Length: 65
Image 1 (cartoon, helix red, strand yellow):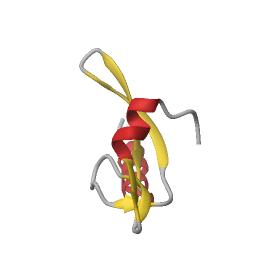
Image 2 (cartoon, rainbow, N blue to C red):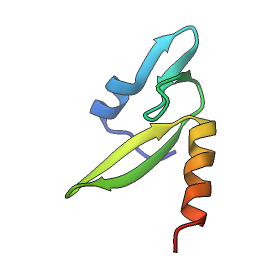
Image 3 (cartoon, rainbow, N blue to C red):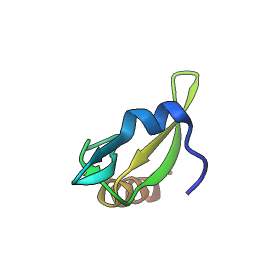
Image 4 (tube, rainbow, N blue to C red):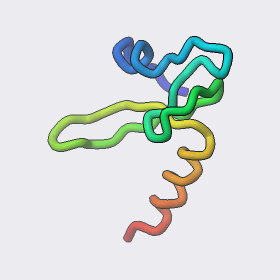
């Protein structure tokens, strides 16, 4: 996994018994994450996704022209 900025880490890190991180999309706590980057408006964003949301995101990219 690439470098995670401190703001992203602080926001998404769950720190509870269910997992160390919080998924950006479904907000579930998880120990396994994937970092993604995307543009929102004119700003580049780095966020973390759980395994299931990451798989859905990758699948959605396959269907784009």
